[in-house]
Length: 51
Image (cartoon, rainbow, N blue to C red; front, side, top):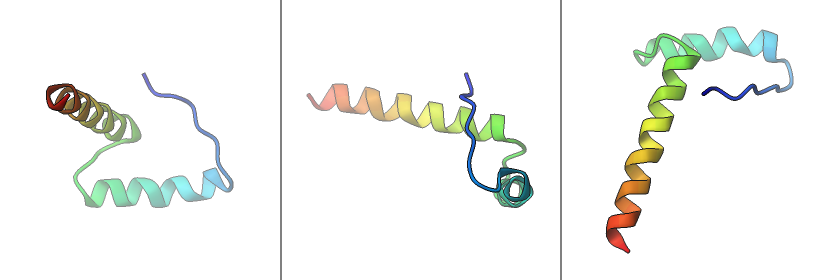
């Protein structure tokens, strides 16, 4: 689930953000969000194993 985020000069900055994502092989904000969520799950599982 993607949370709606608002920030200063969002309209102007979104093109720059998408360009950087694309340079790194990420097609969209949604895909970037999925990657972040997977990393959180990986780190959460690792932390539980270390306890």
